[in-house]
Amino acid sequence: MEFGKYLSHQIGTGMKKFNVYLLIFVLGACSTDSPYLTARKVQLATPDVQTTSIYSTGVNKLTVSHLAPGASLAITHQDTGKEFSVQSDEAFLLQETGLYAIRAVQSPFLPSETLYKRLLPKGKDIAQLTWMGQAPTKYFKGGSRVLTDGKNAGLSFQDSGWTGADTPFSIAITFAEKTQIDSLVLGVLLDTGAWIFPTAEVVVTAMDDPKQKTIKQQLNTAWPSEGPQHQFVTLPVSLEAKSIELKFSPQNLPEPHPGAGQPAWLFMDELIIY
Amino acid sequence: MATRRQFLNTSMTLASAAFIPPLAWCCSEEDPLIIGHGDYRYRILPDWGKLDASEFPVQDCHEMVQTKNGDLYLLTNHTRNNVLVYSLDGKLKNAWGTQFPGAHGLTLFDENGEEVLWITDYERHQVFKTSLSGEILMVIDAPQDVLAYKDPSQFKPTETAIAPDGSIYIADGYGAQHILQYDPKGQLVHVFGGYGTADHQFQNAHGICIDQRKGKQPSLLITAREQQAVKRFSLEGEHLQTLSLPGAHICRPVIHREQCYFSVLKSKGVGNADSGFVLIMDENDKVVSCPGASFETDASEDFLYHQTLRVFQYPHDVCVDRDENLYIAQWNSGNTYPIKLERV
Image (cartoon, rainbow over all chains, first blue to last red; front, side, top):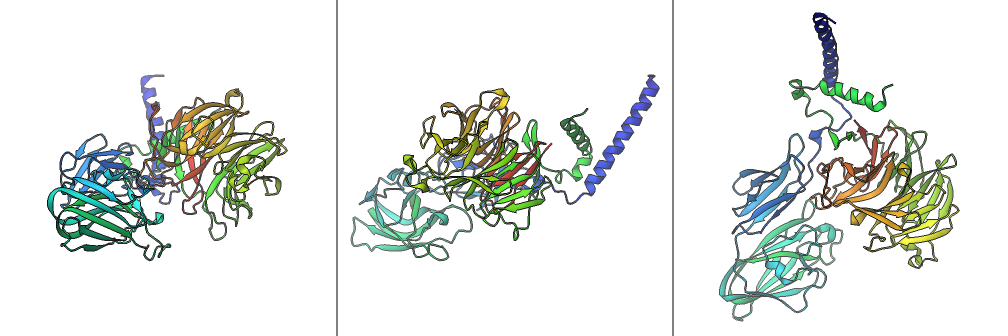
């Protein structure tokens, strides 16, 4: 075929193809009720985000796994509104105390569920933590140390980082020297489906100074609107002591739980004293 | 003559060409999402099997099979209609069954030209052979001469597989984790497996099928869902091989042509519990696609399979039709009907 004819043939063929493409495009563009699922209606899976510690002191590295390829993490420091973007292969250091909201993002997909990580200031140094009487038998896999190891337990109550009980228990805490105690922060699990709800009476007693009054507090949290949550609750205390006793008495499940009136399980991690 | 796949590939090329830049901007977010990898990629039809729930309700959609005439049979544990029969276009053709509260496993077998269904019911602790219209042809009860089943309620069968000679294999995946072999008349022949972590044992022997691919000696593929593995046994019950799929809680193996398809109920480690996906292996037991999940072409042994997109909740079975489209039945997913994945 001559080059001129060949060129004319190719242009003709090309125009026909273009017309076909254009027709398909127009038909596609006019179609508003496609039966197919589109990307922007699909949510990214929730990644697994871990931090080295729950404290803002020292090097606190955030690591992520189970992130969709091409997705990144959008991190917002709730207290200041600062926003950060972290790629999957990047290391990210958390430096400020407060609540971080974290989710996976990738256009055009819907962002993943939001995860929350709270970084707390370091508490008083605890010289010794001991159980007074029988320690919980079932949910005590990590032993005493996990209550003050600075690491978050996972959201499953079976994670060895949790200490759980549905009957009263007591803990003795000893400092190196007489210490002013202003407050107690308790990390607690809310998992109502597993009858885990932090409703308890907490009694704090100075063991080495019987003249000081015993402080009684009620541990309560708002009813959770979604799945398992790890919350931190602050209980004000005003004591000066070298040793204190913390007595926890789990109470009954409140309304509207289907097991209302039955004993609630109290799961703790972690215990911080300021 | 062009094959169907060639025709589809040509159509896809034309369709893709229609959205080449700079025209892509107006439709990119509205284009069908395509999931999967390599040659196994799919568009998603979420409403394919949707019915009027007030008339034809479902609870858990446990399993699906396709009969010779192309109809798709769905098994649900809703006793208003345990079996829903769909045509390929997602229209309901028939509904039957009110007696299977623990309807779980659905296996199709061609018995000398006549197709029959095998239904396991873990609440009734029985296995049923039925006609395609629901007539009960045989019932297998808990084998009380087996020590583990002195109490019949310990028999919680999840799946059956029928060998070419008619031998019946029952996986007791919610019970004592045994695999029970019966002759075609329903007489117990052999028991193997059991609960444990040894090669020949199971933690959740959930699904079972006969593997006759590539003219090999027929063998059994049995999933150990909690162990995230599939195990191969001889028809006599000898353990031959364990294939590990870290992170993937696989339900049952489904062999179609040279591939083996798995619905994955959930992923290990993902933040949302409803973290299922689909996994496809080729004839060499190599994972070739994971619609809705992470994938590597040459994954190392410890590569973690996990959901990346929340397309599915808890997939419980995958049915492959003759055009290699997939139908995903889901457990505990808000009484939803099966999703169709249209192969591209």
